[in-house]
Image (cartoon, rainbow, N blue to C red; front, side, top):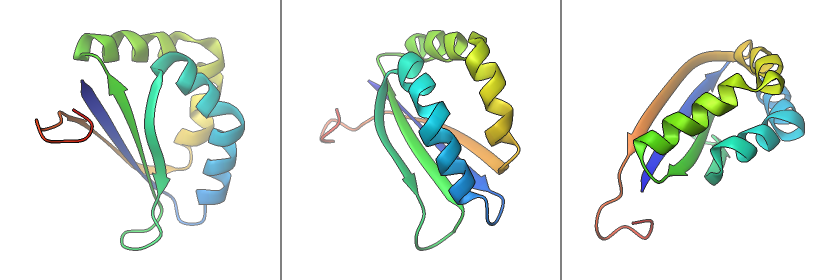
Length: 104
């Protein structure tokens, strides 16, 4: 199993708008295509204006297939610019659990 940890730094003051957009439109599409949502978080202490979401995939090929399908959906193509306008920075990491991780 592979985990993708995506971290977004939002423009100051846009967290409520981002959460509303994702909650009302985006998360349904993401779950439909990406499938296995492990968690979706926002920062309260430390670096502020951050969103972290974690998705699980069977393999890197599984991830690529799912992300390509999402990117091709006309509803996602219409939605993505709405949240992209709120972002300052994006980072994506592929993580693999250790043998002793509860998620392995």
